[in-house]
Length: 222
Image (cartoon, rainbow, N blue to C red; front, side, top):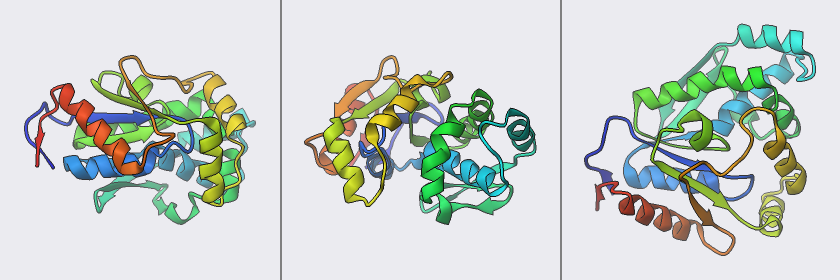
């Protein structure tokens, strides 16, 4: 499928909690539409890794504020996907590090941390049509987009998916952190389509999203 005719730089937002398949589904939807794929979580993980490497603690407001003030974020697109560079460094090989997964929610709860990372994400939407996934894309980053989706699945299924990936993460604790943070908590964005992925394959989820886009008047062809 390819993009036919819409306003300049449309954004499809795909939000949801951990282990619902946001990244794989978003990448596939972007490929169908001929859009660029962006994982906002990769930017958060890249900056978290950089902060940890610099000895910065999420609890030290003064150190973190200085770190964020000096932060340089840039991006490039490679094979249809956004790659983030933090202070000129491609942190891709470190995004799944255990420490990054352990500390990312602590950094993400800091309002200044989220505010600094907001503009680089919005800037991508000014450059190209996007499918962007995360936890606050339709509610905070691009609240004006009419193309919003929220993926969900049962807690049991999501925990099972994490274990199958070999990732040690307690889903209930992560949900609690994400949904109770002061700024940009995890919520279902206003106007978003809710898609339960518990018993669906990735391709079934992708096709459901494409059908819903057509219902909204999103024009694309085979």
